[in-house]
Length: 404
Ligand SMILES: *Cc1c(COP(=O)(O)O)cnc(C)c1O
Image 1: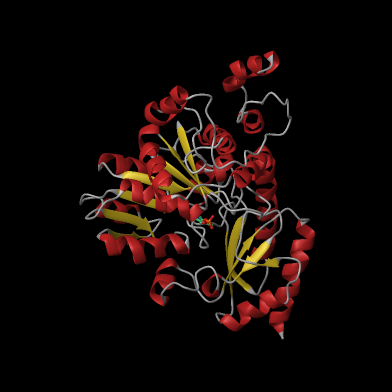
Image 2: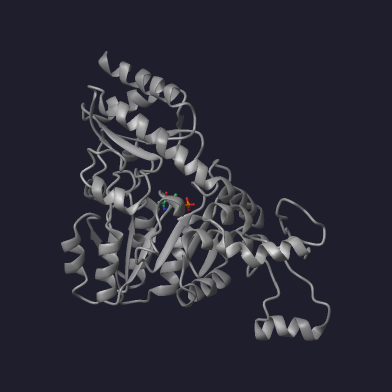
């Protein structure tokens, strides 16, 4: 390591978070590269049998095999851990891989799992269709009803799980209040922080035990690759690491490199996403064809005070309800826009738009969809970084079509 790298490393922990998001990660190799290298190798070699045995038997820390460890992935984990304020981080192949690994590591047959109704569709399906089959009891609770959480916690529960803001209804869970309840009842509290990212919201600092990410979204930021992460105290991450090693839901080194680069611009992107989303939400709120806009940064949001206290800004995702309740009108709106991409992804510099009831949440039972508040007249927009004037014009095209 060069002397100037050594000096920077000794002081990096004291530098600002934005600086650490750019400078923490991999140590420079003897090649003196500026951008972090991608280690595309399945295994790692040892100079002698003694060193090899030390790595395998005594966990000396040397890389062994890419399902288990890889320097590029470690670099991504270190960088994200600094941002979330976590002791430890594990990366996974997808966001769902992170959800799966967390539940596999921490739950067993007979456990009760409490889950917010406002979670990602695949998360709900994973528990309902698989974990329940192996003897886990699932209890669904409204994200905003603290007394319902408290009541559910009056019986022993292993793990409580939520996302905030919820997708696509943008309801806010009070992380601090719920983490206090969970702590009092000895229940692990897991927050999926995908929508806000650590730039806008830090669940661990508010008392959560574990944070989950779909890195596929804002951590990449340009809709290129898939990945996930789990963060928290080292003793809670260790069983997650064990599961990933055995279960093989490992992140690819190339994807880890994309996420490393994504974290370097995360702070400026999240600010810009939030500014664009707020301006678009304010405009949408004025339109006669729209009944209600759900965005955490709007003063009209029923939980604006909480949202404002808990997160730095509202983030990039909003949803709205058309005044006409039919699916046909929602589809007509979509079909008359053309700048916004008609796709289910979010967290991209390109704005995306979708009809959750027939796309992202289309495979859920009708009853679950109703429980989650996903109606036929709801549209979700994940606001990107195009000019907000052009986004407003695109929405204008969609809304104008509804008049006829
Ligand atoms: C996309 C998403 C996931 C799942 O992540 P994948 O990377 O698609 O597997 C989980 N939670 C939330 C909130 C998401 O938006």
